[in-house]
Every structure is written in C-alpha cells, then in structure tokens.
Amino acid sequence: MFIKSGLRTVKMEAQAVSELQHRIDDAFTVACDTLLACTGRVVVTGMGKSGHIGNKIAATLASTGTPAFFVHPGEASHGDLGMITKNDVVLAISSSGNTIELITLLPLIKRLGIPLISMTGDPSSALAQAAYANLDISVSNEACPLNLAPTTSTTVTLVMGDALAIALLESRGFTAEDFAFSHPGGALGRKLLLKVSDIMHKDQEVPRVEPGTPLQNALLEMTAKGFGMTTVIDQKGRLVGVFTDGDLRRVIDSEIDLNSVSVKDVMSSNPKTINQDILAAEALNIMEQSSITAVIIENEHKHPVGIVHMHDILRAGVI
Image (cartoon, rainbow, N blue to C red; front, side):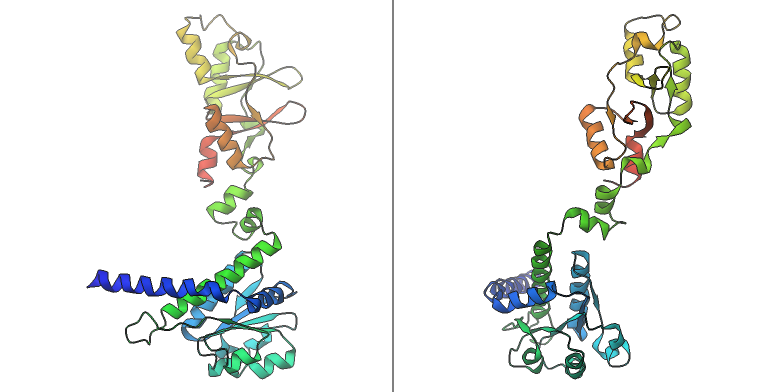
C-alpha cells in the first residue's frame, strides 16, 4: 500500500513537472528580462504553502546572483511594504491567482510603479492580469487523493522558480567563484576561496638548516618543528633543497654513517614548491599527485616563506 501510494505520487508530480517544458515561452522571457533589468532586489511573496516555496525561491535567486528576499504578504500590509523600493521587482506566487492578501497589495505595487511578475495556475486571475508576465504553474490534480493539499502544485512552482534562477544565472555569467562568495561558510566556499596563505605556517614555524649542517642537527630541527621535513637554505636564504623522513629512511637503508654526513650530502635538490596565492584545494591536489604530506611555499626570491601540511588543509574543511 505504501509503495503503491508513493509511486503514484512520484509519477503524478513527475508528469506535472514535464508539462512545464511547454510553458517556458515568451512570458518566461519577459519575466527573465524584467528580473535581469532589476537594479534593486527581487521581492518574492506568497501565502501559505506558496509562501514556503517562495522563501526557497528567494534563497535560490539570492545564492545564484540575483539579490532577492521574501516578504510575507500579510505583514506587508502592516508595515513590511516599506522594505520594498521603486528599484525592486515583485514576484508574487499564488496557485489561484486570487489570494486576498496578494490582491490587497496590487494597488500599492502599481502606485510605486514596481514591475510585477506572477506565478499562478489561472491566467485569467486578478494577479495574472495585473502582472507584466504570468508564469503558468497550473496542475490538473494534486497528488493528494483528496485533491486538496498542495503537493503537485508546490513542486511545479518550485521547479519554475529554479528555471528562473538558473536562466538568470547563465545570463549573468555567474561563476563557481561568485557562488562561493555567497557561501563562504560551506565546503564549496572554502574550496574555492581558501588560499594557501590563509593556512600556511610561516616565520619561525618553518624548519630551516644550512647545507653544511650535520645531519643529526637537521634531525633535531625536523623534530622541533614537527613537519617530518626541513628546508635547506643557502647563506642568502634561498631554497636549495629539502630533507624529509623519506630521505632519512633512504639514508638508513644505504647504511650511511649518520654522524659523518651533512644535510647537503643526502638532501633532495629539487623540492616541490608552490606559490602562497594558489588555492588550498590546488595545493592538496599537488601533494596527492606528488605523494607528499607537506609542501614548501616559496616567494619570487626563492626564499621558503611558509609550509603547509595536508592536515592543515583537511582541518580547514576544504574537502
């Protein structure tokens, strides 16, 4: 019984959504042009379930490059209309197109000269007739067997809102980096915004030894700084090599006397380095490709100015 009911609901809503393909028409173009030309914000409004969907549509618009917010139509009549300016566009949602709280706002919207876009299930309704463009969100039946609870209609409304948002996104040339700036706290935001310079260890935290340093002393520097490696610099502070835990294992395997060699005799002369301005996600990829757990940050003078460990990037929540 449950499976049968669930499948029926999915089938009905999928069918209703598929019918939207024939409604992406001239009215949709007018709506997009109007929203794109808006120099203020898109004010989304709707009552009941349409309001809940409107809230989500406003959030989607805002996160994809179209400044938007939701205003409850009931509250708008009692002061919140002051949030709307002459530079804004109103996107009003109503399945019937005759929701009294929205109809009450029409004279005020017209008086302010604000463009109105409607999403209704009745093109002859008062709301649709007052709009620059009406987007048809009508459905033949709700998934609710009583044909009462907004189910199919809210799904269709949400998809139409997504269609608007994505059409505007593509028209604006909105990029992944733009998206990240409006989601700085999310994983995507950190991946696209966090740079190596934001998390690297620098100054006295960077292990440094000179080429003539006895290997034993270099090991003490590695232990003190805790990165499993040390940079090797010349007298001018330029990077000439690196000595790592892996190099130490090779020295031990070759049975070299640890007490008799200097770092220059066993270091790797061409260490992997990066610029501090690259993204942390890119640094992580470089480490994975090179099979290393830490990478040196080098400036334009070949000086090692920092070091970043894989754990630093993981702690930052980049992935």
